[in-house]
Amino acid sequence: HTRVLTGITTTGTPHLGNYVGAIRPAILASRDPEVDAFYFMADYHALIKSDDPDRVEASRLKITATFLAAGLDPNVATFYRQSDIPEVPELMWLLTCVTSKGLLNRAHAYKAAVDRNIEAQEDADAGVTAGLYMYPVLMAADILAFNANKVPVGRDQIQHIEMARDIAQRFNHTYGREFFVMPEALIEEQVATLPGLDGRKMSKSYDNTIPLFEGGPKGLREAIMKIVTDSRAPGEPKDTEDSALFTIFQAFASPAETTAFADALHNGIGWGEAKQVLFERIEAEVAPMRERYDALMARPDDMEDILLAGAAKARAIAAPLLETLRDAVGLRSAR
Ligand code: TYM
Image (cartoon, helix red, strand yellow):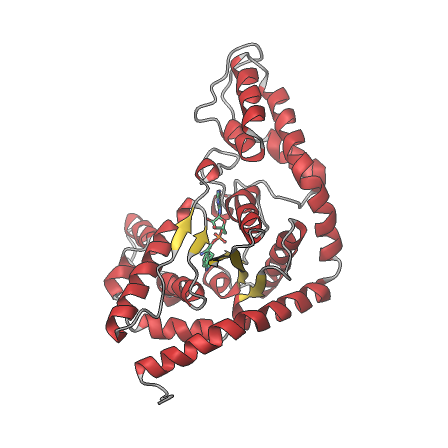
């Protein structure tokens, strides 16, 4: 069996990028009988980005409801909250002690923060918490606590998976055994980076997201109408290259539908009409899920029960591994 694992940070409202980049492929993978799937709310990661407890909690509920509404079966996948697994932060410490500081210096998110500071002529590490710095080690612990083989993520997370491999290798080498398998990123080539309203990567940080469910069909349509396009008038042929609108369409359509849409653009369909076509395509996929989402959001206690049951399943796997690791590093002796 292949172990597939992925997490979503609980700081925001799920958007189309999370859905096509992570949630949809994760759910598809979980339906493969050869796959053991592990999906979780990365709420420890959320604390790196947000010190607003209400926001972290609200986001956790929304992301939990999104996975379930999009079709995740918690009896098939192991579906849990990161902070219910004490083995994760414990493993993080064991990994921290074999991780070179130089590796973490190279992490994109940390480097970006330092570059911004230098640009602003501030102290290089101004405002950088140790949490941000350690982010890749926490993520490595998420993956390695379950010895996941495949990690479906968007392109922005590839470096973190590479670091998890480096850290796993270092631990195996230091303690002389193959405790960890090498995880691999799983990227859906077609939709590796879904663009947002302005054409940059769709991201909470750029404020360019299209929410998956929030706002209903009206909100979805309004957001789609805001996707930036060039100024070509109806009747003028449109490019599909570098068009955020086209790229998003592609992520929601079959190859045949995509070809038909490309033809319509080349033949000069107006942008307004193209946006309406895009709206209808996405709405067709999302509408039934939105109904389930609203029902779930009205019953947070049910979701809590599901997450706690998932945590018990997850710990049954992580706990024995941690026993082995404690022994291996000399903290406890099972001998
Ligand atoms: P996060 O919460 O930023 O994003 C969740 C997932 O959504 C993907 N994603 C996108 N994919 C395509 N296009 C986009 N515009 C887009 N925006 C976001 C991300 O690549 C990610 O797969 N550190 C992770 C969470 C995490 C994790 C883990 C993932 C914590 N531990 C262990 C895998 C394994 C994060 O912040 O993702």
